[in-house]
Image (cartoon, rainbow, N blue to C red; front, side):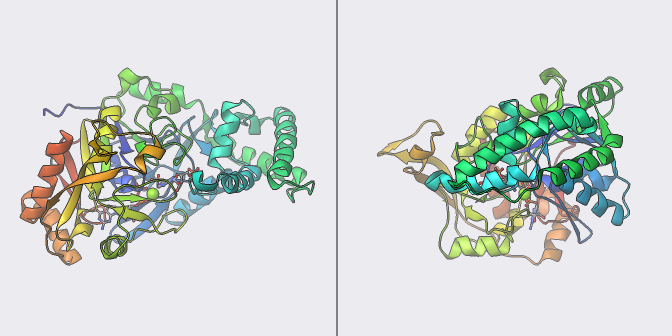
Length: 439
Ligand code: GDP
Ligand code: IMO
Ligand code: MG
C-alpha cells in the first residue's frame, strides 16, 4: 500500500488499552509540533522510556518530553490536581511544558471519585473494575448537562451557582448509594475554594482549542493525536459495560478536539503481540496457567495507573479485525514482540465458536462473548534474547528479527489485511523498528 504524506496523524489503541501508545506517540512526536489528547482522563497510564529513564503520563500528552506543544482537548475529563502534579514532574525533570487546555473540557471533583467506587459496588458481575478516578461519573454529568467545564472555574459567580447545584445533587446520590442518611465527609467550602484556586492557576493555559488546532492546520503545522484506552474499551464500539466512558476509537478525535473528519490524514492502530486487559469482562483468549503467568511476568504486565496485574491472553485477531474495520486504520504498530519470545508454540485466535457455529462477525454483546470458544491456529515461537540483542536488532532493522518473529508478523498482517509500519521490541524509544516513513 502506498503511504501518503500527512499533516495530522492519529494514534489509538486498537484493543483493551495499554498497547504501548505512549511509547509510539513519543517516538512519532519528534516530527510533530503539537500533540493532543482528545478523550479520557487520568484513567490512562502511558509509559515512555528514553535511555532507560521512565516517564508516566496519565493526563498530559506523551509528546511532552519531546518538548512539543501539548493540548488537552475538549473531550477530556480533567482532574486539576493530577494536571498540576504532572506539570510539576515535567518541570522537575527539566522540561518546559507548553500546555494549552480546552475551556470546554470537564472537571473531575472528589465526589466523582467517591461515586465511581460506590456505583461499581452496585454493579455486581457487571462491574468493569474502574480505575476509581471518577471518569464515568464525570462523563455522566457532562452528558446530563450538570457538568462543570474548565471555563466555569474561571468565574467565581458562575462556578458558585453550578457548584451548589451539583454538590447537593451528588450528596443525595451518595446517601442513596450508601443507603444511609449519614452525610459524606466532603467539605463543600473547602472544595469550592480549592477548585477556584485551581481555576486561577489554570487560567494561563486555557484557550478555545478547536480554534487553535484548526488555525494550526491552516498554517501547515503537524499535529499528532494521542488516544487513551483502546477501541474495545470505548463507550460506543467497545464491550459494554466492561469499558470506559469516552469515545476511544479514532472517530473520537473529531468530537474531542473540534477538528473535522476531512482534516484527519492518517490513522495508526497500536496492537500488542498478545492480548492484555485490566478489569472485568470476558476475555476469550485469556491464559490462566503457566503461559499466562510467564507472559505477564516477562511483559511486566501490571497497570501503569493502578498497579493491578493485567489479564493476558493470546492475540485475538477476530476482535482486532472488528477494531480495524471501525477505525479504518492506515497501518499498525505492533508492540511487545520481544516479550513473546520463549513461548512455543504461539496461538493466534482467528475466530469464535458460539453454540457449535463459527461466527462471521465479532459479537459485541458481552453475554455472548463469554460463551464463545476461541478458534486458534498455531505458529512456532522464537528463542528468548537478552535485551542488548533486541537493541542490536532495532539498530539493524527489520531483517534482523528472528525468522519466526517475522513469520508471526506476516501472519498477523495477512489475517488482518493491513500492514505494520512500526515494530516495537523493547520499552525504550530506541528499541523500535520503523519499516516505512510514517508522517
Ligand atoms: P499505553 O497505555 O498504551 O501507553 O501502554 P502502557 O504504558 O500502559 O503499557 C505498555 C508497557 O509496555 C509499558 O511499560 C511500556 O514501557 C512497555 N512497552 C511498550 N512497548 C514495548 C515493547 O515493545 N517491548 C517491551 N518489552 N515493553 C514495551
Ligand atoms: P491506557 O490509556 C487499560 C479500564 C479499567 C476498567 C474500565 C473502566 O493506559 O491504555 P474507568 O476508570 O475508565 O471508568 O475504567 O476501563 N481502563 C483501562 N484499561 N488501559 C487504560 O488506559 C484504561 N483506562 C481504563 O480497568 O476496566
Ligand atoms: Mg496504559
